[in-house]
Image (cartoon, rainbow, N blue to C red; front, side, top):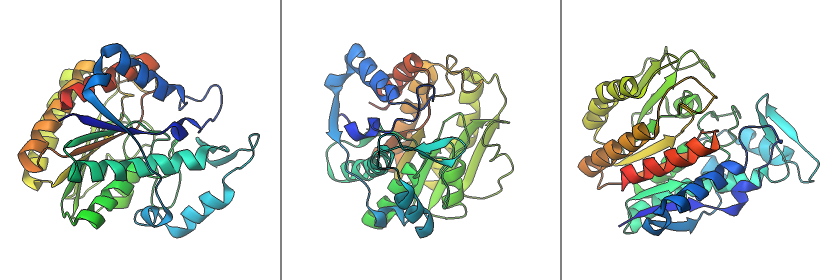
Length: 307
């Protein structure tokens, strides 16, 4: 049994600008580190398939989906802004559909194939995209699309979504808030974009706002104290992960001080939780992580933790 990695060359067609941090080189950096580490021989790699409109409709408003499709540029020199941080160019819509579809492929994999863990190496990311709006580099909410697909297709009634990106997963929270089938756990630097999550009150949400300068031991202690008992009590039938690596010490997108050791630790702990509750099933999808070297090393460490 290995980990299945889903990706697609179309995910590199989303090109914003030479200076935008969410760039195709992120995927290349992860691939390079997987090869350099020798881990490629321990992974099963598969191409993702695109999400269809009906898949998006489970978690996004119809008028928002229509607006994205209608406004999507088709010429190489065209671009539009969906929000101040989120641009679409000629390759963006296709990339976003494959990013959203990858999670559904991963759900099928962990429910029907030998491998019980999957990682979606895709872009653009998704966890800031709300029910009816793009936000923070995100167009469609990849983890939400996959979660809704899992509940619709496999009839499961309890999904835990774990989001360890350094930014609060506001879009995922927006989509599933007060949905008793979904336990949403997010750790994030606060205050920091999108300046949400610290005040949320819901039995289905376990947010951990932490200050700038938070190091690995502090983060691990908070996660162990807040998330793990809630996940054990919830007894999920599937664990979904918004895997953001922008909390790394070397990533200047924020001011956390996490290292590869922390990402290996969370991968290992989530594996143990999954083996206890849901036959080892974990689907993780890439969110943030913008310093290329630390991103590649952190993803490899996380994957090794889940092995």
